[in-house]
Length: 483
Image (cartoon, rainbow, N blue to C red):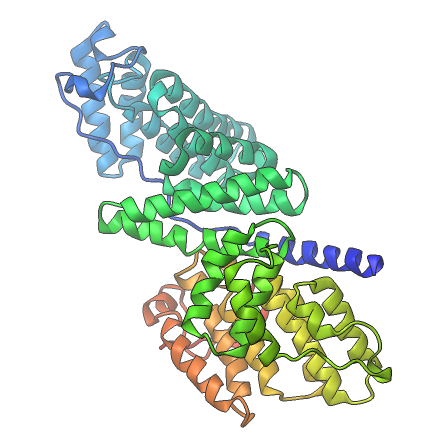
């Protein structure tokens, strides 16, 4: 059994690593900047920057003029024309009027603009380094916004300059921002930090306790940001985050003792209340609570106990089925032992139909309980090898694909929506099986509307009927379609 548990653990790690490899996509940081005034703003904006300001320059009016000119060029996206004026304004008054950080953040834009036409590797590296220096200078001149600049630097390192720092360095930068800002952490921090957190947990680079701590912080940040967003644009950004981060953190349910009892009760009680007589729901909720180490005295577990016995009577152990009851192992959340048990039954059975059922049960364990989609598909396909065209296996694979939007993209938009194509492919196969035709038709109807739009396809120079490969962990060929 120890050998199996080790093998299972390795399979879980491999599966999660495949998923964390999908880079999270998120809207770029939004940095608010007000219009520069000739007089200092009200005192409620805090103390003026300690760095050199317009009033400190030898020629204040000339520096202000350079500032206005370069800002006008920037607004018209005439960056080449802006550079000489920006250099004068930044060199003589890096803190501008002492309340606004234009010269640093605009400086970043200018360096990145220059990179586009630079071919010399040494000069490119210098421009890249200048970007990070500007963020560091901004933090010195505007210490109250230090975590913002640190977050912007981490964001750039993660998405734009991934080779400029190690994953550990990026993780620590993001973590410092979250430690400082707490639940008020900016939306653009959450998705990349979530991906890095999962990567570190799976690779055992941080302790389980640290993983638990920051997973909880992410939940709190998303809840706060979603609740307190102030306008449509801001709320849309938080919707993008809430469609990604919580789904990624759900993968950690496959790690034993990661989430406590209350996590599972808060999440799965709602599912039970929505379907209190459905045996599959009863089994899922009961097993989830047991996996979360809820005590047997828990009121919900006690309520579910007679229902689980009704739905899944204890398996009768005979001479041909010696050993533990697979069903009992599963319902008590002993997942590795249950997988071992069902696999043994599948391999030793002389009935291909029975073996297919055992393999599909293993696939469901990986999907519903361990959140390991690639392993789930592997066993669903093993079931199909023994029972070709089996609708239940195709329905499950379709659900795996449909659930992968946040894993393979930002949670919505083209990169997430393409998973519906391969999901519907599987459900169309399931429609050929009379046992699952109705369910498959219902699922197709539900997800059909979420396929990429005609506009999305047109923008990518694609057309209906083209071949397309859905990548990420799926890596499946399909055909382009629109609702």
